[in-house]
Amino acid sequence: MSTGDWIEAGLDELELTEHGDSTPLPVVAIVGRPNVGKSTLVNRIIGRREAVVEDVPGVTRDRVTYDANWRGRRFTVVDTGGWDPDATGMNLRIAEQAQVAVELADVIVFVVDATVGATDADEIVGSVLRQSGKPVILAANKVDNQQLELEAAGLWSLGLGEPYPVSALHGRSSGDLLDVILDGLPETPEVTFEAERGPARVALLGKPNVGKSSLLNKLAGEERVLVDPMAGTTRDPVDELVELGGRTWRFVDTAGIRRRDRELQGADFYAAMRTRAALERTEVAIVLIDASEPLTEQDLRIIGLVIESGRAMVVAFNKWDLVDEDRRYYLEKEIDRQLVRTPWALRVNISAKTGRHLDRLVPALEKALDSWSTRVPTARLNAFLTELVQQTPPPVRGGKQPKILFATQASVEPPKFVLFTSGWLEETYRRFIERRIREEFGFAGSPIDVTMKIREKRPKKDK
Image 1 (tube, helix red, strand yellow):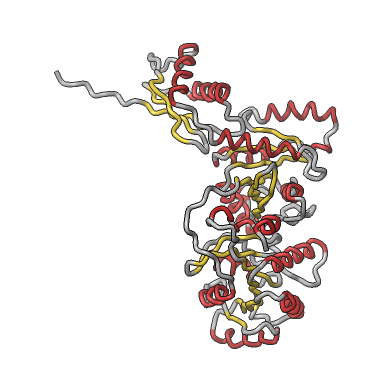
Image 2 (image 1 turned 45 degrees about the horizontal axis):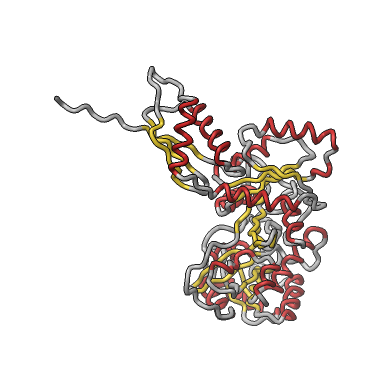
């Protein structure tokens, strides 16, 4: 399979530009019936709790990929939803995503619950896997003791060779299973040099059912992630490489943030935590808001989450085609009023369903990223502030007027400015400076941070 084919397949953790070679990492697909412990096994393989796990079937719904490393070998692990041959509705589409993962994989790990034994569904899935022509490793999961290890031998009946007993929950024999997986993987060249930064990473955030997955599928031109009218379809962050505007972007479709963290339970709690972690790994966020409904506290909290993370931001008002002309005028006014603290956020009105104005997303993303990495020369910054302070001096505090002695931009991504002062600057004056810096230097789509460092008073010398 060519590099272009991998990009079209959308496997997110291949990181072609980060490994110094055009050969993608080998792929291991973890498949099996619902609730046999696939996501628990994925967490065990990658060595961290990334995949959402809960003791109910159907928690994982999309095919989700992770980067793994064992004995110095790197590979991509694809976690899939439960593969039920008799599935209908959304469960059928989950099973279809699992089949796609099988087609793209180099090695397949078929997970079976050893405490239950081979079911009719396992027999059917096993038959499909035998016909795939791919190396299949049969993992007999939930083997927590020697007695169950003997019972796991009954899985030879699936015709997939030797069953490898393992306890994904407790880690029993997981190293042995990883050794077997490595033996089945194709060889990959060693990294010989440090490559340039990979594609820009874009997080898709918003309430459940606001259209995040629909937008990703529309941008990709195919159904990469599962879409269903039921809210909360996406649980794990799903990364996809998408070609847009002549460049490759890494889009991260995240779980919808339902309520405050303290009100979340089970899979929703861990999904929210993974959404936050996914945001920290990106450079820019698209916050999707349903334009057909009034802005809610939930929408504003999500925008606040992006601001706290220091990421560049584009606010996309989805379902704009459902808003009539009269309502659009008043909606714009409402948006201006409710986003008064974030006037710098770039706004785009789109329809993920029809594709309306999706071409405006890339210019907005590029502008936000440019702002996020902009550095103002120190001399120019200080000349600007000197003139600004002459026109509008800081408020007097404690009978003395503080002075701005010097200013510098301490960092980018996000831009941070430090003001060296002779005294305390009121918060309102610091906000005034931030607003004027934006007017002078731009920073559309990017948060900026303005802090101060007060000069310590020098001790008086003894006469």
